[in-house]
Image 1 (tube, rainbow, N blue to C red):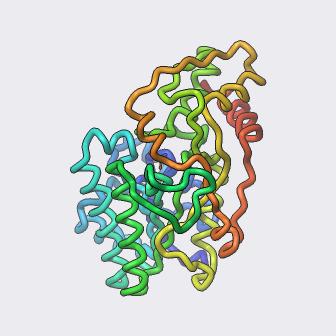
Image 2: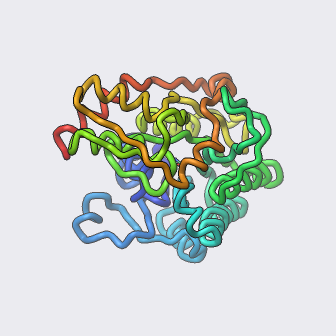
Length: 318
Ligand code: SER
């Protein structure tokens, strides 16, 4: 049955998008997965990722046209402004993160698509949330624009499920780390840049302080979690707001120590900026036992395994 699905990925040029398109195409076949992004790609770039459509998720008419043109059955909506960028442009972040979601929820409500994936984030938590092993259900008072938009989005997803039976599924991603694409404007981006800089220059100036521990996940785990969630039987998905998801937790000092095992001369220095305040409002570790129980989630990568794999793949390419 899976192969009858036609999937639209919105935000395919982003950090998760490219890898998710790859993962989905290996399951559904190339022509069954349509990549789309607001970016105007060159002819050569389009050739590599085709089928591809230039798409602004805020243009609901064009989203509808594309859904009809390709007979789309599932949407993965990844287009969003992340935490640091959203603080610089709060009104646009709110518009994109909320109205983008509403456009797809409405399509699902009207029966034009059958299933929707929408990512949430550890940013839904805030300074009053318990920071260690943050439970699935807890105090949530986010104080960033991004966090407020994700928490509100979660409430609306659950509402559309309860009220209109929209099959919407979501994960609260921790910071994501991968070698295939660059992150775009998040507080956890340092954990990607640090590998590039270690390999290229043997040093890195970190915008978070040395003991700022945050929940993180290696991209292959994040893609697997996303696909596992979307392929689980609907009756197993008990949470329609968003699932806690945990991979590993580490601080800049700890990731630097791990990198030193591969590059003994590697040096990290610290110069914090406003992202430090954002990081301090987020949990340090996440309890994802509900995801484990409901649909069998288990992460495979820890800091050591991820570091070896990142360095192995990046070494030849930068
Ligand atoms: N990685 C994201 C950010 O830092 C969190 O969802 O904004």
